[in-house]
Length: 431
Image (spheres, helix red, strand yellow):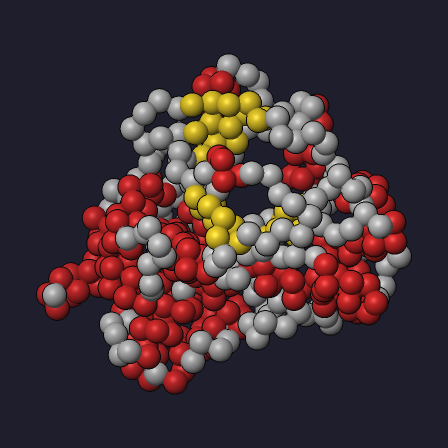
């Protein structure tokens, strides 16, 4: 879908390899296992020929269209409304051949309706609460703006299951390629590596049939939400709790920061005292065991996930991963020190320089034009007025605002590492 150098290179690599690529699973305490994956039978780079992509989606053989477009890729605001007036969407609606995923799928569904081919399932695999509902809102809103009759057909026939996907799969860097090629014995232009843990929970609502994926470990259920909440508020929130402070402290790799005992204590307390009390465990899951498993997964040195990648686009991630825990903690009068620390680290991260003075690239495509000035305002509390915190109600809690201001001041005066040490030490004394 994307028309940039990285996506073009990926398209060229996969075409050159007939869609084949190696998948290297990297356990923490066992040898790597390598498989050649042959599930990609055709690779279309939509920007090269969007009309061809629409025709392919309209093929009756296509039954499921899966999506991974990131948290911010649905153009749904904090109130749950599709941003129909967003320039990208407005421009797309005016085109004869649309460019967005909403437009391509909708035009393909038009052809399928007219030919009698029937609908396909649209399966979101992004880290969003109720991702199927979000996808439904986005696609139906686009379709209604384009063609009300077609939108009514889509609403009546297309299904949008919710899903929860959990597997750490880092971006492949140049230093990784030699190691992966050595493990596989293949010069792969598009290698993938991941941990050996995997969990995929899917709402069983498919309008055009589905393969028997339960035979390979997929859990089909009538309600994904309990699994989704646990994953987002524990795993993904913990990633943010690693990424933002970690970048400021000068770390760049997850497994490296997991050697810091203060970080371990921060995560254990956040999971056990902040996140878990506000969650209900889904069937077959014990929350404390899940939290302990997360820490073991993060320690896996073979999965050298990049903290800058994890920290990127936090403006989209924090509302999804942390907001509910923050609101619940403040509502019950709980200890909000760890949440204040995380949000203070986010505000400081936006400055683009760590505690050692090293510059790094800040990637925040979903911040508004007024947000960076707010983050850098002399009144450090103004950072809580950034669009990322809209609707959180943080300003309704003066004690939290004061805690946030003190935490930012401590980070600026003594550094993130010292501020974290004080945080966990004071928590130990209170316990």
